[in-house]
Amino acid sequence: MKVLVIGGTGMVGSHVVQELRARDVDVYVLTRSMEKAEQLPTGVKGVVGDLLKPDTVRSVFGGVDGVFLLNAVSTTEAHEGLMAVNGARMADVDRIVYLSVHDVDHAPHLPHFGAKLPVEMAIQESGIDYTILRPNNFFQNDLWSKEALLQYGVYPQPIGTVGLSRVDVRDIAEAAALALTTDGHAGATYNLVGPEVLTGPDSAARWSDALGKPITYGGDDLDAWEQQALQFLPPFMVFDFRLMYAFFQERGLKATDDDVARLTDLLGRPPRRFEDFARETAQQWQG
Ligand SMILES: NC(=O)c1ccc[n+]([C@@H]2O[C@H](COP(=O)([O-])OP(=O)(O)OC[C@H]3O[C@@H](n4cnc5c(N)ncnc54)[C@H](OP(=O)(O)O)[C@@H]3O)[C@@H](O)[C@H]2O)c1
Image 1 (cartoon, rainbow, N blue to C red):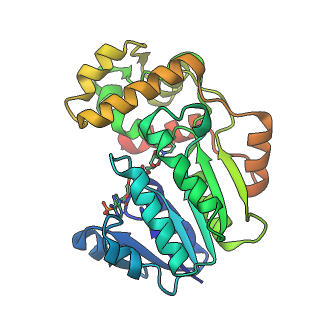
Image 2 (cartoon, rainbow, N blue to C red; image 1 turned 45 degrees about the vertical axis):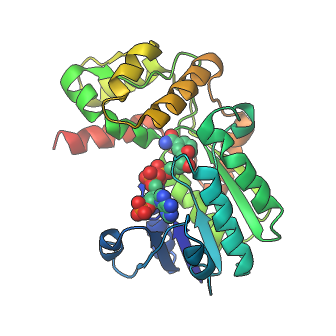
């Protein structure tokens, strides 16, 4: 089986590549960078191209059986997603697995949530066997907070006190590989979630246990978060993520028992726990 992984050089996609290789799939990765194409794991073939370029979209899907599609958070996200769906349609691929986001339909005003709705719709109308994965907030987002956690003892993501059913990227990748390589997932939408609801203070407490030192929640002040974030993220992204945090603070992003049960069935085991992720990560950071 030949699968094209779009986003295969990034956080989720690189884990999807590993999971597919572990299942003996012939994996191709689309990347805009020749350098990244040359650094892919052994046995993975890089294809240099860009979803914004019609030539890429016309050529890269040829001879592919399955596609894993994610689109980076960008001002052209919906366009890139629709370009990919058209490429997959023109090449008659058998199966597509798309990475959307949990509760996308409850927050279509958030630019990087709303951008996914037309792509989901185009996939559903494409005639291609599809599976839509809607993940919650990633555990691995906290890797960006290494300095705040280790040096300042602060958990800085202002996710609020309603709570999120945060999920491990490795579970997302495993779910994607299963949807691409096993039967019974055509037309399905899975919410990909963790086993517990975590608030900002809960996340801080888990980090405190894992690191063996006090970690406090940075609080819900979005003005303060924005000031900090503008130092390392582009303004369009800070604007978008600020709205997302406001939504999290007001409504949360919580799984139902049924979401957890369906994911447990899909994976054949319960989803990973945040405390285990935090402990493993703390061990790596502390050598
Ligand atoms: N973080 C969360 O908590 C969370 C939760 C739910 C959903 N999501 C969704 O997850 C997605 C991001 O996943 P990620 O964190 O794995 O992304 P990432 O690490 O930022 O990687 C982005 C990938 O997209 C590729 N890419 C970017 N522009 C491209 C283009 N024009 N043509 C082809 N490839 C392109 C990049 O490839 P090159 O750079 O190699 O070209 C890279 O492989 C977003 O849609 C986000 O909304 C995130």
